[in-house]
Image (cartoon, rainbow, N blue to C red; front, side, top):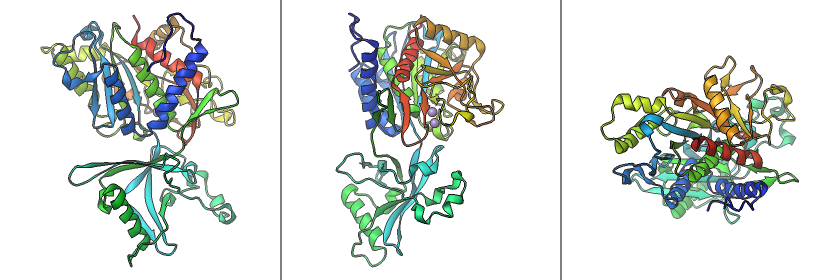
Length: 456
Ligand code: MN
Ligand code: MN
């Protein structure tokens, strides 16, 4: 349930922030992959009067709908008073996070050591050395030739085994210490230990034993691991952090912090003038490619399906007008100024943790390459929307101009002629197995997204 906003006004802001943080912690504890987020959203949306787009023949004012894209991405929204003239208010976040995937042929036995291992390939921009010697859980699915989907989730509970990719002991790391940090752990050294007990087979007895256990527990064979999406994610859960409990430490704030705050803003948004779309993309961490990413035709095809149900005779001119009159926020986390690595930030333009949602006028790197920049008129509009509702916000750029950078889904939305700006909570330790976000910033992000959806 949503927290009682308390018409009597008896609930203090601090209590609202605590309640909101509790719900968020439950969410990220249970949803560690895009598929798990989609399952969560589907269930909650149904409970809050949303129905699948296919269930509607017409979409009058006040319809609440959602559309899933292959269990990995989802669009939810509502119809406002005049979608053909007003367009949509779009909040676009992503629900994939950096992690370590299994290769299609992962399992092998090192006969010399009698250890069965699985080969991995990391997903997204990680610092590889952060992912060794941490407890990992296996999440995902294997699909049999029959099409049957076998869900796997192993390692989150105390009673379940976790998996570890061991690093070299320091006693013998004299040469490894001389490597550049980037090569401290190489991709092909990220091998997961999965067993040491030998079965009766003559060839590869440890690997054979693991295969027998996989068959027994999940009914899968070695080749089924090739038709699988299996990911290793941190096995530990989120926790409040700091003596003052002001932060949340957890895996995947990027970008489930924005996805959750978007989702909660969406649920609060009823009877608004504007039509809304909340897009939960997959594949952002690898550039938006693929059928569930922001470079797919998800926006066109969904907007088309929606408009056909609002006004079946609509024209291509209407379609483009709807897109042109839409407004978007790319809801994604930003970097918080790191007090121990200040030299990578432009002190004057860096976002500070605890100071509210970060608005990034532009993303990209160097000379603003490969990013998206919001026009000044649109930045002014967003300032007004947020300040009118008393939302705490700050402007920020990711780091020093020549230090690095990054992109979001914003440029893929801008392609449709939709003004778009990046805004999300600042995060410390981004893309690590345990990121930090401020409870206050999380709540201000929710308020910002709600103000955007409910502007008048
Ligand atoms: Mn992100
Ligand atoms: Mn990211």
